Length: 318
Image 1 (cartoon, rainbow, N blue to C red):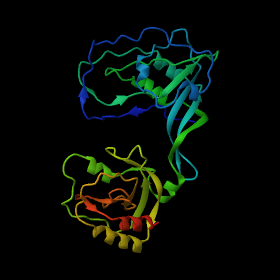
Image 2 (cartoon, rainbow, N blue to C red):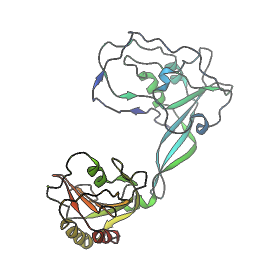
Image 3 (cartoon, rainbow, N blue to C red):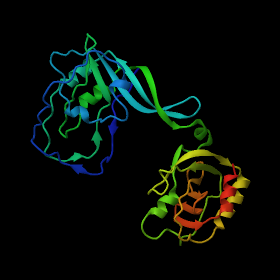
Image 4 (cartoon, rainbow, N blue to C red):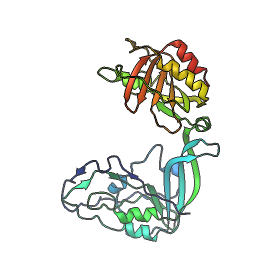
């Protein structure tokens, strides 16, 4: 089974340029890599969390007397489930055709350029190589003129023939209920985010809401998120609203009071009204706390004051 094994993390793709400092020719890392007597699993070897994808640039290189005969790749990423949900998983993948990879791992660093380099961060997935005795190590990789992994290494990893031998579920990223509702598993309470920003809140703009169709998603904000600069909510329930129900709720929302007055309470639940195609803007409603509303439209945002009664109507709409 062919699998893409290279991860290119573009944190600032073409957002700027940087000139690598130092000498024109980089010295390879010194020392010898740690050779382990026997493989256990990706769960034990790779450790928890996300790997440092640029770390192999600083590892000692493949020893001349170590002859790779196989490779293991430990890849982390989202995986859909049959019920429509999604998990974050770690995949352990093995392969035995390592000739091209071995050649790439024996390449030296290229001379560093004195010119400009793009500011994107390029790395490689977590991988290790085995010898015929079953010993394994994580080899360093050579850098290119911009101190990024050489393209030969990235290409060799990209074209490895790999078979997944084990999958570990690290956590759920989307529940089946969220998937069937059309809502995201997590969403930011933008009322809390907007009101937490310094300066005047957007209150003098006209409020607007798409005519429909409309989807309603309800979220619960954990105590640790309440009062933060951008409170994150976890999916509670949601789904499409019947046209007649949305028409009635839309009228109530647009009839809400003027700009909210001073209030320091933090919402523990909020509602998001959003069209299925994501167009036309969004409406946020705090279901407790200050009961504020945010109309976020293509022409701008407007804050309004809701009521406990309106919040109850929204809560009962699903």
